[in-house]
Image (cartoon, rainbow, N blue to C red; front, side, top):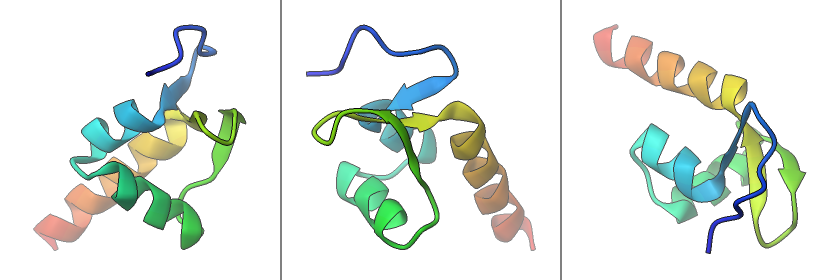
Length: 66
């Protein structure tokens, strides 16, 4: 279940996965590889900075067009 009390400017793991077009396991892999860092929440329901997620989206789009 997603947290309803998320701080502005942050996304849940589910929202992050949807925005990136990947699975929750893919989000965990990004964290493990150091490409994305948690910025709040709890160990079971982490939050990610919307700015960091947007930067990853832009990076992925640029890689597709290159």
